[in-house]
Length: 113
Image 1: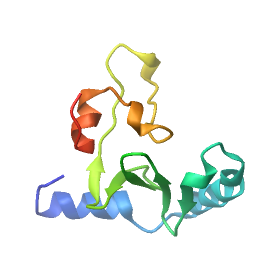
Image 2: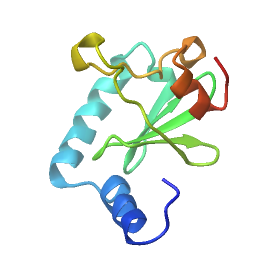
Image 3: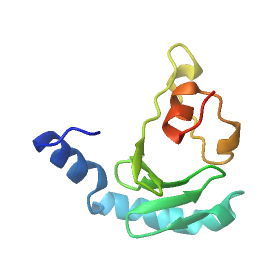
Image 4: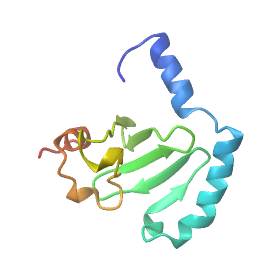
């Protein structure tokens, strides 16, 4: 989101704010589950984010809003389900981001299809 002004300020507050009590509880659950995951060695938790080191980028997923920032430049990653596929399910690219074929996501990652 590149728009200045009140919309951007609201988006940043809502999307990357301190965690609510329920988000804190989810963070605690993730902290217990994370070591058991196949990708545990690529993941860590900080105060507000699940940090996932992918093959192409490192992703910081806000634990309250699920907004995703990509390091090193904190660019926003927008993932939406393709129309008519997957029954509305969204599959995140973090486990093996080198196999992504979706041109919209590849463009955001700085790669071409």
